[in-house]
Length: 506
Picture 1: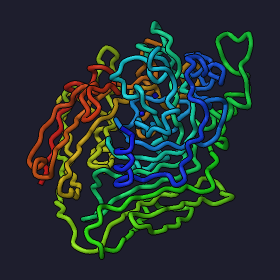
Picture 2 (picture 1 turned 90 degrees about the horizontal axis):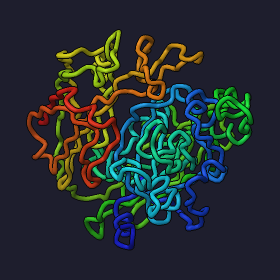
Picture 3 (picture 1 turned 30 degrees about the vertical axis):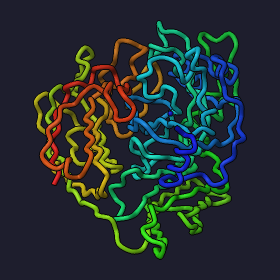
């Protein structure tokens, strides 16, 4: 599914952010025409994108060049629903507020409220650069938290599946044009605003690179080599498009020869302090090399993937930068998730679950991301009204002086058909949801929608403020996010009151 930066901000960036080395001001024209996506290959066909006979995504300007963007990430979360034919797992979703030189990537016209400037200002994507990557590809350690800075490399595309405002399924709304996104990514660098993992006095920057573009890359490439079919029963591409887009070999994407970025050190405590760097592997199979050059106020990093890779390659490491000498005070908190009480197992009882409800919930604790189903498998098997699910799992979090605690839980009820044939097409199981073979929304335009389980979002200004026992009831995902105002990334008020979560901070 399915985003100021003047001199003062630039100075702040140098003080705390990963910055792409050698960033250039040269870029393609900013797309302002509402209907440019049609020229680039979108068909505005619900049935075409739903049955994978028309592309869900196409390159802006039909150009597959890898684009770069840096900025602040807002409203970071796992997707609620995704197309079952083009995915093997649900996406990670983020929204970049890009620095000035990357704003050209945000399509549309604010005055006429088109493309990325269309619809409700409370929408998570409004005036931002939305970005996505499948969760089975992008590991949790590289998922940003709201407020982190990030540098992204990825495919600049149109999201062909959404072209009307006020209508998720393009029925009865106003045509405002498709949104531009970076989807999929091929690399991400995340500068942690408040790292749960960094030792006292360290800045943490997480880096992940992969040539796995998943189904999105296959669709985008096949949209270049195939074309619309005249006279078809509904707008669709030629007969070769679907098998091309479904071919696993087409999921492998090209990478840049080098990924270069700068990581700023913390404030230097004294003139005699020396720079220190730790590099920690975060995934099992790191493929690629890094070169680190120390500078007066940080490090320059160059990550180089293999020149001729064989199969899937991944690189995932964290860089910790600090100074020698005395360290600032850091408080270690132990956060224990105790239990979840299910208040409403089915967020949308108008469409019942014959064999029970299946939930997937995600935790973000100062950048520590976790699928709660791993700790509480009962969420996956099925949940019932009034059920108390024990979690009893503790996470250790380091909180530097002057920093706070971000605690976020949200997810989905797995309603999309999965593991069955729908309209003659087999619906994939999308990780981490289980099979759903007996529930089917009678509204054909909502058949692949999941229900919203609701959001728990607590932000504490300090480690001391976070301490204690907290019991929270989920609210709708239309909720006030710090620094972003009231934001909608769920399904209206559907998530309110569905569960009660208890956690203890010591």
